[in-house]
Structures are given as C-alpha cells and as structure tokens.
Image 1 (cartoon, rainbow, N blue to C red):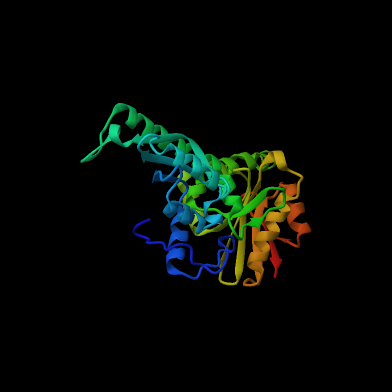
Image 2: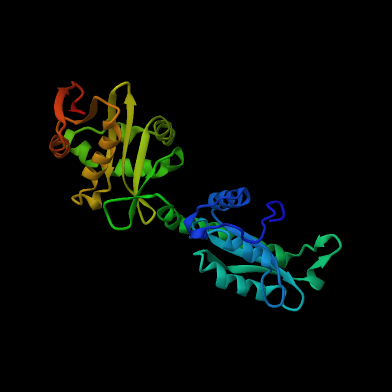
Length: 305
C-alpha cells in the first residue's frame, strides 16, 4: 500500500463502473484483478481497521468479487482482532469471502526489536491460514470466472464460455475421452486422436488452435476449436458431456465457431466418422455439405461462407 501511495478516494465515478481515470487506481485495479486471494496485515485503531485499508478496499468493486481474504492482525490487548471483525463487515459487501483462520499478534508477547519472534504456534497458525486461502481460492474460481465483466453467457442457465488455454489441458483430456466413446462405437475403432493423445499433445493443440470451453459450476461441459488457413476455416473437437446430450449445446457451440470464422473465410471445413450419423445430421442441418469420404473412415463436410 505504501508503494502505491493511494490518496483518499479521488475518482469521479463509482468504482462499480470501472471507469478509472487515475494511474494509481488503474495500477491498484490490475494488482487486485490478477490475484486469486489476499492476506491483509492490519493493526487496530480504536476498535477498527486503519483508514488506509478501508480506503484501499473502497477504491475497487468487481475486482474483489469471489476471492478469499485472510488476516494477520496485531495490537495490544485484543491483538488487533477487533480490526479484523470490522474489516469482515466491509469485505463481505464487496463479495470477498473472509477466512475462518487468522493470525493474531499481541505486541508484547510476539514482537521484539528484530520482528516477530518465531514459535511453533505462530508457524502452525500461519500455515493454516495459507492452506485455507489456497483451498478457498480454488473453490471460488468458478464464481470468479462467471462474474468477470464481458463474460459471454452460454446456452444453459449459469453457463459461460471462456477461451481454453494449455492450463485447461487436464479438463480437455477428460472431456474428449468421455465424449468420443459414441464415435468409437459407431465407427468400430479406438484409433481416434481424442483417445490416444497425451496431456502434452492436448497442450500443444490448445496453443495452435483458437479453442473455447463452455463451463458450468466449474465443470467443462463442452468445447470446440477453430483456426484459419488463408481463406479456409477449420472446426474440430466439438464435444459435449454425455449427460447433457439433447440440450442444444453442440449446435450452440458449432454456431459459435462458425460465426467466428464466417467474416474472414470463404469456406469452413470439418470432419467426422463416416458412420457417425448423429454428427453428420447435425452438420448438414447447419448448412454443411458432404465433400469427400476418406479411406480411413472419415467424411469431410464443407460450408460456404
């Protein structure tokens, strides 16, 4: 906080609008937005938190949402615990989630001229605080993602679409191995890339393709990938979790990918197993026309933009 040197709130607009004009506000917004959780180290002044902490909280709005905050407090008689209780009333309004674990330092018992005196009890408390922070940060991630400004709403209530990155490869690997069972059964083969790819293979194509995932309550329920080669667009790995078949998710994802390519491509290509009648029916109903059937048992379909 000292490095940022935030003045008392001096923005013209309410923080909820995110219309920041001052460099210090933009810098603070970036720091908070990129973080998954926080530890506030705070003293106590007259049964409350210091004005600098209250001011820093008040500067922002959506950047705080659905992130955990823990406290290390210090003071005399109460070891700063009343400051923490005061802060918790404020942070819940910002949709921050307070931790149950805390570290409270009574100055005369824990502090000397060199700093905090180490002890087994304090070390255990600090480790417990950090462990709870990490667990809750992971648990709240779906809430954070769904609440981000500009997030695109998906076809099911509570679902949203988000670009996939190599960090999502474990989710993608599980999804495609679940979703290609029907393809394997229909075409009587297990020699399909979604079954044979390693985690490293998935990470590689997530780097090369523009891929999006459909998420619901932290679960990857669908995906599709697309890319351009000159004026030709390519779509692949259209997948929906089996328990949500028949809800229109596959068609929605296909249209999402097609619309993204349409303005810059003369034609869009995709392929599926030659015996995958449900897939072929979906694609032809969306304007794709069967183009070629390959010896390896796949069929290519093309749609003109």
